[in-house]
Length: 220
Image 1 (spheres, rainbow, N blue to C red):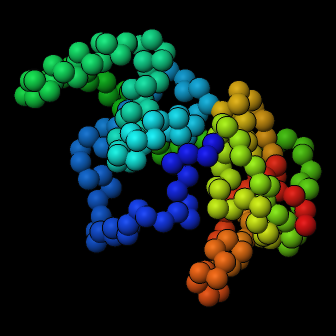
Image 2 (image 1 turned 180 degrees about the horizontal axis):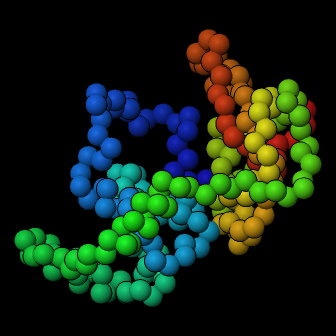
């Protein structure tokens, strides 16, 4: 999907602030959003849901505000509560900021959440799929513009590169947004010369490494 979320290589967003001793979370609520489970499936996956946020909302929101917006929207779409009910609760707490929100203690749920966070599942599969490329092969990325999710950024489309690593066969994230969650493809690390991506404005001797599924690539 070509949207505002695909900011790689774009100008105009100002310098990236670098904080000394930056905390994991700047506010307590960010940690709560990170740990908050989504009790309903997210169609197309979490990243695709982020990409479907309204562009103005996406740009005006902080990182974890986007996470929160996605979880709210997914639960509304699933019928967990309605937009009217959410707006009523939001209006109530804005008018009564000291009111205590509902709270439930569940130590077992906390331990399950911690176990999930600390033990991520691998996307590598044992499917017998022979890779089309070998280390050192010259490739070119496809100039594609899908309307659903893709991990191929716009700045790297139609560019020459080289295969530098092979990660095996892994679940293909793009297929999840298209309703094919079990599709798998060979996954590679691909090296782009800086000048190939940025032209004469590239820093000398610079290079960018991106992880690429096989369907993103074609032989040169």
